[in-house]
Image 1 (cartoon, one colour):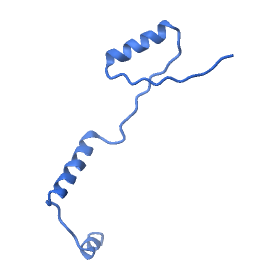
Image 2: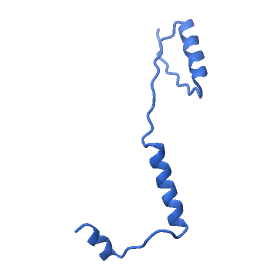
Image 3: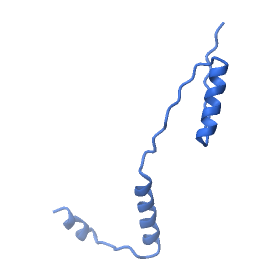
Image 4: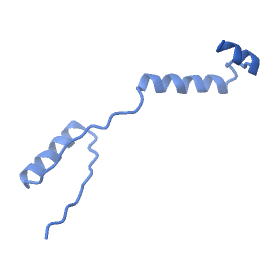
Length: 73
């Protein structure tokens, strides 16, 4: 009987990744390496977080609903 299991490792360096790959190869264990992309660019995330800090510090501008609506006309 063959049982299929999945192992998920999270190496934090290239060295760790290479060791894990070598270990699997030595034991003739099939494996695959995938790269998970970040959903947002780091610069964009930092820009949004900085803007949030400024708003919380009272540096933002407030618009009435009429002013907001006029932006889209």
